[in-house]
Image (cartoon, rainbow, N blue to C red; front, side):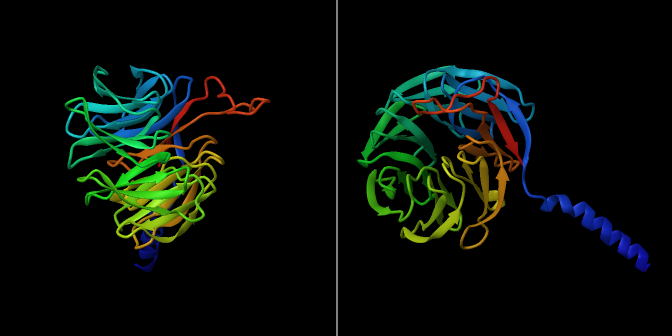
Length: 328
């Protein structure tokens, strides 16, 4: 009986081991050449939507089928799905929020924003999309069903990613000043702006259910701030040159991809204070991503790059190397 018990215990340990295995890149899905920016997972159609330099791509999370240029355009930055509809909103840098059917690709409206329309977020209570006009320092509020602009807020600073707390507040990183701003959604006005001490060019922003905001900073740290009063709570070491940050509340996780060294910081958010529990090697340049709320799979965009130009600037993408990375 003792031998049988030991055997069963050993078998259980072997079977349970994979659950404790750190996440890693398990798949790479080839995409067409060209730049990219923000991506999102659409749980209703089971597709990843990727904003590209020439349009929006859609990748089926079940079959890996790629629909290139679901819509076409120039220098797309952000894209979000509108829950409960077939609509999505994509932002073009020139200053347009394009509303389209994310199943058929049919464009239903082109809404004027301010220049450098970038990250966008859906606010479910007002059923509006809030577009961060980066260099313009304004937020354009768009009704995607009506296909119209319904408001604007000026913050007077370069805007990056935003997050909402579900209690009537929107938070956004101010990249040029290294600040974090809080906005009253109902009043459409800025409540307060606070400095993120030691944070250079904050970009990605995630809100986790413990009430903590996590801001990704270009200098290799993530600043934690209490959302209720914007008090600093500490910092987490991440890689250099991050861009996005996103949370998976169902699994008590948050993620920050860093393009400078090709790493993904995995953060446990189950306790009162988030803590990094793993670092996944991804691909240099993989700086934005999204998580599938139904499976927990993380999707990142990446590519291989050649040497930078002699006069400076971004290094060129190696032809045929653009891909969607899947991390589990």
